[in-house]
Amino acid sequence: MNDILVHQHVHSRLSLHTRVWENATRRALEQIKLRAGSAALDVGCGSGDVMRLIAAQLGGRGRIIGMDIDRRLLEGTAAVLQAEQPGLYSFVVDDLMQRSVTADGEFDLVFARLLLLHITRPVEALQRLWARVRPQGVLMVMDYDLTTARSVPEHGAIERALRLVNGSMRRAGREIDIGTVMPSLFVEAGIGAPDACEVSSVLMGARTATRMLREVLNSLQPLILRARLVDAAALERVEAALLQSADSNQFIRWPDLVTTWKYKPP
Ligand SMILES: C[S@@+](CC[C@H](N)C(=O)[O-])C[C@H]1O[C@@H](n2cnc3c(N)ncnc32)[C@H](O)[C@@H]1O
Image (tube, rainbow, N blue to C red; front, side, top):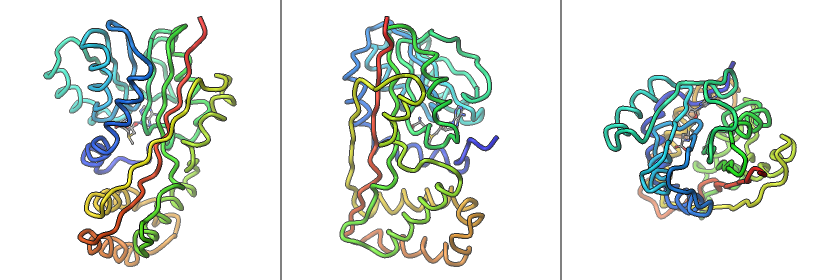
């Protein structure tokens, strides 16, 4: 099973991503108007930052379960969040694609951000997520369309880095435009057409964006080299060029994040 694409550096990368997407995620969660006391499941919760935003929607009252396949990451997340708000959060180490520790039809909200891009069978994953939503509950997923990323003004090394990210993900069998394809995947999964679908974009300055891009390249290095998109020396040159452009007046349009959601009929 090769559903995990990114293991290395996951903690540091998630926290930068988290800052970038905090507002978009909060706005998305506000739209579904969760009631205090609801039960929520965050699948692929990582460092648990979305769980905090869900907690704010629930007014600190309810049950929020974080599920992740990565035991070590989850143990760190659990230690931090449970110290912040004892009794609100619980955690389960589980592979969405393998077993079912969490019960079907149990949750008012089933949420997954930046998970399906890393899963080779996203339609099956959606079916597994949907099964856990209780009647009148909601499934919300947020995922990238990697094809929308670009440098402004166009910059050789940044474009090259983006091509390496997209090329290696594609070779690994990932749907790199999964965010945009998501509504049709909902239909294919038998969930039906989503109730809503929104696109968020972020334009970042060179300092943050090149740092994030170098971290992504670093985590994808084994895939990039295995796919023979470049050799190790060429990859190092791309990373060095990114480092040099950190102080430039470049901007990067980070990949669009697409939020898709649907309520389950009564
Ligand atoms: C890119 S991170 C996103 C983390 C978090 N959702 C966020 O947006 O900040 C993907 C997370 O999904 C987890 N993951 C990947 N495949 C999984 C699977 N099959 N079952 C459960 N978790 C999985 C990874 O361990 C990682 O923590």
